[in-house]
Length: 223
Length: 218
Image 1: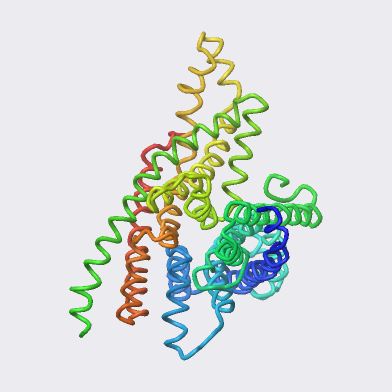
Image 2: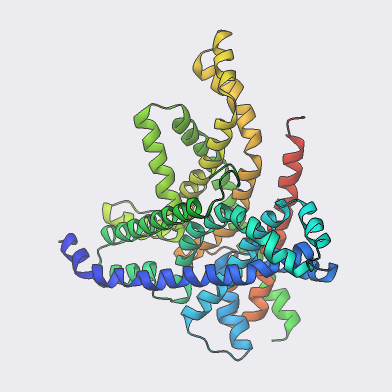
C-alpha cells in the first residue's frame, strides 16, 4: 500500500530535485562570484574595505539560515518594494550566506601563497592586478578547491530550510505528499535517500575534478 | 502602539522566553552530542569491521540527511510506529543525532592523528587496550578536536532555530510570532538577528579561550 503510494508520487518528489539543485547552484555561483571578490578585498583591500567585509562575513556566518530567510523574505525585500517569488529569495539568501563562508575558504587559500611571490611578480613589472590574476589566483584556487567543495554538502542540506518560505524543493514536496496521503515514513525516508545520494554524487564528482586539475607535487597534502 | 512600548512590552518578554528555550535546547543537546560523538568515533577507529562500518553509516546518514527532514521524521514520522514525541524531545533528539555525527568526524580525525606508537607503548607498559584509549589517546585527541567541536557547538546554536518548524517556540519562533502578529517584520527579525549574533560572538570568544587553555604546549 505504502509502496504503491510512494511509486505513484515518486515523479512529483523527483521533480523537486531541479529546484533543490537550482538553489544549490545559485548558492555556489553567487558564492564564488561574490565570495572571491570579498576574499580579495579582505586580503588586499584598504582598512575600511576590510572592515566592511568582515562585518558582512560576521553577520551572515553568525545567523541561522532560517532567520536570514525570514529577514529577507518578510522584511528586507518587501521593504525595498521587491515582490520576489520564494525561489529567488531562497536562492539569493543562500547565495549571500554561502558567499560569506566561501570567502573565508578563498581568503585562507590566498593567504597561504607566500608573500614573496607577490613581491617577485611586482619586481618583474606586473601590476598588482596582473599579479593577483596570473600568479596568486591560479595557485590559490587549486588550494581552495577541497575546502570549497566541502561547502557543497552543507549548502545542499541547508537548502531544505527554504521549506520555511514555501519553495517547492524536495523537502517541501515530501511534506506535501505526506499531508495528501498520510503515508509518512516511506516518503520522508525516500527524501532522505535522495538527499544523501545527491550529496554523495556531487562530492564524488568534485573529487574527480580535483584530481584532474591538480598540479603534480603541489597542493594541500595531495588530496 | 509606538516603538518603545512594542520593544518593552512585547519584544523583550517574548525574546526572553525564546532565548530560554533556545538555551535549553542547546544545553541539553551539547553534552549528549559530545559523548555520543566520542563513542561513534571510538567505534569507527578502534571497533571491529562491523562496528566500524555501522558507525560510519551513522555519520554518513545523519550528516547527509537535512536536519529539518530529520526533525520531520522524528516528529511527524515516528507516530505511525506508535512513538509520539513532544516537539521539544523530538528537536533535542534530532539535534543530538546531527551534532554527534559531526562531532564524531572531528574526534575521529584527531584520534587518527595521535601516533599509533603511543598505543603500542601503552600496551607495552601493561595497559589494556581500553585503558590505553581512555588514558592516552582520548585526552590528546579531545584537545585537538576542540576547534572542530566548538565550531559545531556554534552551529548548534544556529540550527536550534529549526525547532520552530516543529512548533517549539524558541528565539526564531518567538520572533516570527510577534512579527506576524504586529506586522513588524524588519524590526523584529533584525532584533532577533542581534540576539543570535551576540550568542554566537560570545561563544566564539569562549571557544578561543578554551582552545588556548587546553593547548598542548609545543
